[in-house]
Length: 97
Image (cartoon, rainbow, N blue to C red; front, side, top):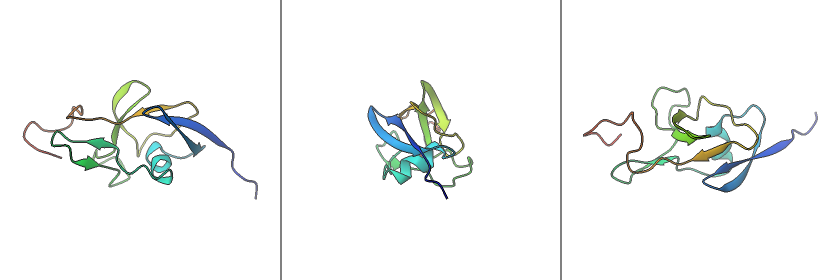
C-alpha cells in the first residue's frame, strides 16, 4: 500500500495538511481544528451531522460564504475562513443555532 501524498490548504491564514479525497470538515478535524464558526452569541460550532443537513459546518471557502464543509472536498491551496458574528445567512434572526 502506497503512502498518500499530502498537500496544503489554509484556515484563516494558517497552513494545514490534507489528503486528496477528504472533505474540508474532515481535514480540519484531523488537524485538530474543532471550531468552524461562531454564532451571534459567540458560541462555537463545529461539524455535527457530517451529511449536510444541520448546517453547523458552514465556513467561507475560496471567497464563497456559507459553504457546507462536510460536503465539500478540500483541494490544494484552498482558502478556508471561519464565519463569525452571525455572518451565516442560514441563522434565524432570533435563534442561536
